[in-house]
Length: 75
Image (cartoon, rainbow, N blue to C red; front, side, top):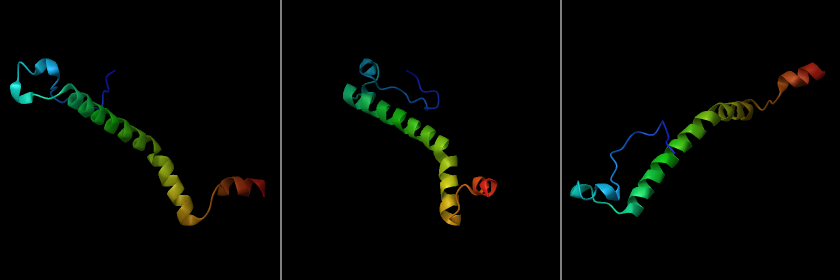
């Protein structure tokens, strides 16, 4: 599975160990770093999607008013 928003990082997979000894890294470390990058990207996507909702909730907290349009229509 590929994540299009994740920056490409030069892989240091075990298959590259023989080609680039200075990139030597265990497979566990490789998987861990890849997981961290993808998890960070997913978190940023989630925050971008919920940012508008967060701003609306802050406005409600600041003003103390919620659904004022619906209340006016019912009155």
